[in-house]
Image 1 (tube, helix red, strand yellow):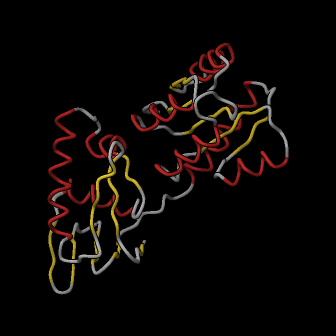
Image 2 (image 1 turned 90 degrees about the vertical axis):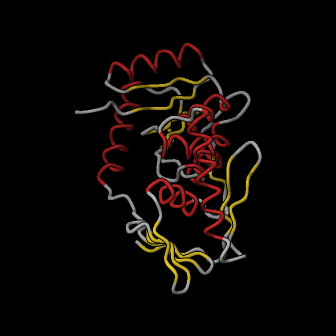
Length: 235
């Protein structure tokens, strides 16, 4: 079957969390358990997950807040809420934040795995949207040909430059988290890869100087933001 599907499980009830992790692992998943929302966020930016299972009522950062931050990093990963809050307004808030499912406590572990399996079948059965061309400011960026164009001038990008610009375009006018970019492109967020990414950011900045309305800015302690007007995508 290949690599195990990976689950981010955030649950502040220690006993329930451990039981769920052991059960999911026994079902063939690789499960990371975090006791609060802040730990869950740190885990998410450092690894890739196939599904996130989030308790709503958690210390330090609640599940709704964590889901919102996860959605800022990745709009595709499925999110399931676990909660004792069953008020209509709470359920609506969960789905408004992009939840794929909302499971009220108490629930059976078998029910949870069945819902996870149903969501993964649906998600993996869909074709992922692939953007081949980004248009921002005066630039056109062909992600397949790795070509950045402005007017009649074209610049062939290296693979790393292209991958980094693709992530910046996908998060245009929003923060591209540093750890997420490193994990996505370099796999490892060690010191040397981080310095390498800084070099590529500098190269991209030079290429984008041709349009003064477009720039890559540093967001201290978080990452980078591509500032660009009129961002358009073409599949």
